[in-house]
Image (cartoon, rainbow, N blue to C red; front, side, top):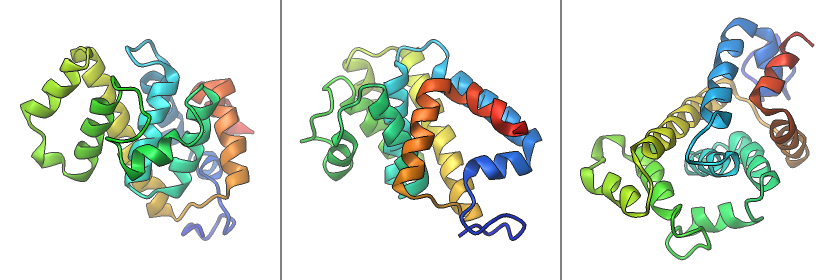
Length: 181
């Protein structure tokens, strides 16, 4: 139930963005840059990171939408649930496990990050640019999770599917074009 009384009780994030288009436009530009610009991580891997962070934060809205988006980019169905249940024994690619462990720790206990955490990412074959990109995705979705939860935004599985497919097909720039619709 949305805490914004001027919007319907079943308000979506798109409706909030449409009500407040100036900050939403800039926020979606940042999303497009972080989630779709060239990176060591492909779009599916970045959506995997976003959904994983959102799952840790128990943000059902973001976790649902970005799980669908990750799966639309080829992340196997059920992988996120397995990773959240037990990352070490999950079928997540060995190269991605230290990245997810890193963003998981950064989400849960940011002040406890160490050189060893970064070294595990580097040992898996990622470089500094990849670590930077993973941190940006993590930070962006910690922000978004707080925004969604702070505004009381909820959605069912049908909306997550619609929104996830829309993000896969049009990216965040496509979502920005809906601000004036």
